[in-house]
Length: 355
Image (cartoon, rainbow, N blue to C red; front, side, top):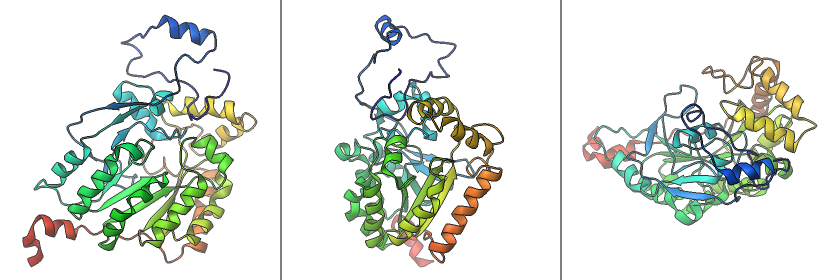
């Protein structure tokens, strides 16, 4: 389509690589509309209930920084065009493009599955991170409250949890988070990629505004809930110049630490991101793509563990050095706490109190 799709990050469909050779989907009406350059489908979001048998996932990637994750939703309406999780939608039979934003699978049985998991005799109470793949506080959470019900289970068992989100909706659950923070079993990671609302609208069209995200950092910090701000991803020539202003601002609001990644366009995301750039920022598209490639050995993606998140080369080093300088200047002596799992272990097995 020649005109950008309002309110969406991805500007096109993306084929599902698993269906490439085995399936052919035909619809004469949709094919006709595509030829006529018309929008063949509505821009509404579909919510599809699924019934998984498990909810907590073990993370095997050594450079992710989490051991276990849980995702109440698959797909994400926030529409961040760079999102690495888009490719995972192919496992559900959808595409990584508009499908990822438009077809959201909801796991209403997540609280029951979570409690079943943490009651296992073999479970030792490692921190479970919500939103390791897709945001647990995306718009539909306001209605369904699956994440909130999961937090109630975790509070009941005094189990440590990390929460990654872009949405100020996390403040709805302050009552639970404050109780968890009082026993050091919760940490929140707020993603802030820019202080510019214009940039935010382009990159992350259905997320909370920059102003609201900053208020969220401040509110959580004021209530004693530890906050890490994730400048992720940093995109050369798009938001790389904002590193120091972001760190300075969030430090003033009470954030205890910051972390960063350099954008990498894995799988279908390279195609989607390039298409998005040429439609939304055409005058800077080539420069941005060339600088991303410079960070990954001449490619838009690097899958090597330990290097893929930080990049390599001159530009990646400049980004890393700038983050380090900003942390030294504004966050020296600060850091995120190690969450306490002893409360859970003692609750699960009262005899642990004897040790």
